[in-house]
Image (cartoon, rainbow, N blue to C red; front, side, top):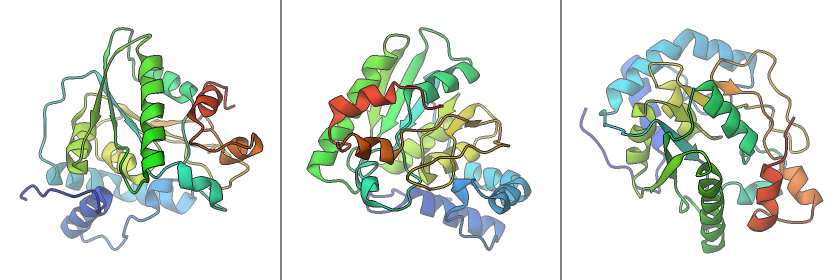
Length: 245
């Protein structure tokens, strides 16, 4: 299959999903299946996961990734618009999530870390500025242990390949990172706990897969309770340092 450039107005997840479905003739659209918070969804992946992984790897041309681990951050439109929604599955991950993921994957001090992100996905200028500020904050935090570089690409397919082909991968909330992780041929990746989409609570799964880190993210209700928004980066970043359990 020839490579196909995907502009920022299209979903790489949808593109990859179409390739998977075409190859496997699977009736599911995969929409919502990345949430992994329903027993039926987990059963679906247990049944079809191997075939899906094989199809994703066949649909993505391999690239060389010269880093020890690639970390994806979901930014741009998220999490800024989530405060107004009754239900939301998009949250910012606390630093404890990354600490746990680094430990699980055996990432040692001095490792080379590539942070992949986009500030421009369906976002307004104010959100783009705040997104970059969050990236800068995490880069500074990670640099206390690792050699950190960033990749902010205008081509999501480039980022997707980077995540799939990385020696190890740490994802963020969302289908983009989930499909990149589930397409990997190993368990050398981590994903946030994807609990029920309730703005006030975030129940952790009792039987998460090995790649899912059981730490609650920063809840939107916590941000609202302090009468701030996600564009108040200087006030939100300290909240991300707090223990989520």
